[in-house]
Amino acid sequence: MSPISIVGVGETRYAKRLHRDLDSLALEAAEVAVRDAGLSTRDIDGIIAPGVDYAGVHELARNLGIDGRFFCAESMHGGAGVVSAPLVAQLAIDAGLATTVLCVQAIVWGTERSGNVGLPHAAMRMKATFEIPFGWYPQIVHFAGMARRHMELYGTTEEQLAAVAIACRKHAALCDNAVMRAPLSLDEYRRIPLIADPFRAADCCLVNDGAAAFIVTAAERAHDLAKPAVRVLSAAQGMVRGGEFSTLRPEYLCTAAIDSGPKAFAQAGVRPADIDFVQIYDNFTAMVIEQLEDLGFCAKGEGGPFVADGRIERGGALPVNTAGGQLAQAFVLSANLMVEAVRQLRGECGARQVANAKLGLVTGYTGAEHATVILGAA
Image 1 (cartoon, rainbow, N blue to C red):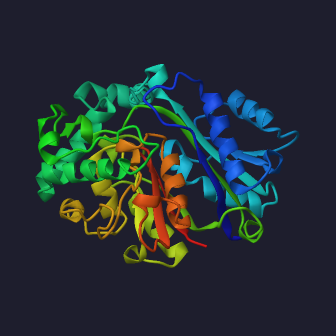
Image 2: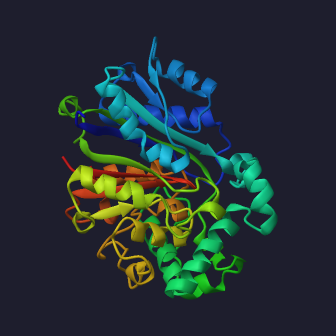
């Protein structure tokens, strides 16, 4: 497959409530990404917009000035759909269906007050019949059960969960466009009431509004554009056995990163030890720990000690979610994580910049699906 690069990124302001509609946020992020790349909106001939409905995609194209046929597709869902977008774009470019693909994700859960992300699960008859009656609902309860099991099996501690939340807050404090910039100490974390044992509010992703976008094109074309291109070294997808139904999974404490991660490392020809920073889908603190294990940064059960003692903070062994992630910057289903990764590899992040960043890894996640992308500096 032909090499591809990310040549432009953009995002709106993130806030708990912006009181704007989904379409206007997606358009703003797209226009910022196009300008960042030094392109015209008329250069865009492909759109991947997970979460934007049929009418919204065509409205976006019309507002961007795309006058004619354009490539449009998506493969996975949620954060996995965002992070696997470069793979879909690469397939389209190789097939001659597009040359320049816009990938955009917008969310208005804050304004719509629809933060109960468990609602789609309630619509699944298998879950409604065999899981929800036994307490596997909503999302926070579902993932709290996984976190508690990890603690019982491997000795993962409350302090280690807190280490993830504290690191994200420290990084968000250095990012002007972050919702939760207030620092968080361990004592403050402990004083936050439990919502679903072992999770407190600080263990949970934000509910907010905002949009982010990035633009993918062939690497050979990227040399002529405005900003240094960020190379997409690999993009891989994974799916857990048992699908969306957690009670059917033989590997209860494994995400599909056990599938997407090895594929991504093999395609890129690098190892976990080569990665300079990661942007991990942090719907909950415990899932950062589990994904780090599943990706091979540490052995299964060793994720708790791995994140402790500042190891995942800026200046640590492996900086994680350097703008605050979805726990502290904004929850945009990994789109903000992709934007931050590109900016880190361009060296544009100022006080939060990872020194000598050459390789970055980004993940996207849903209950059953996972995507891993490895990016390289120009």
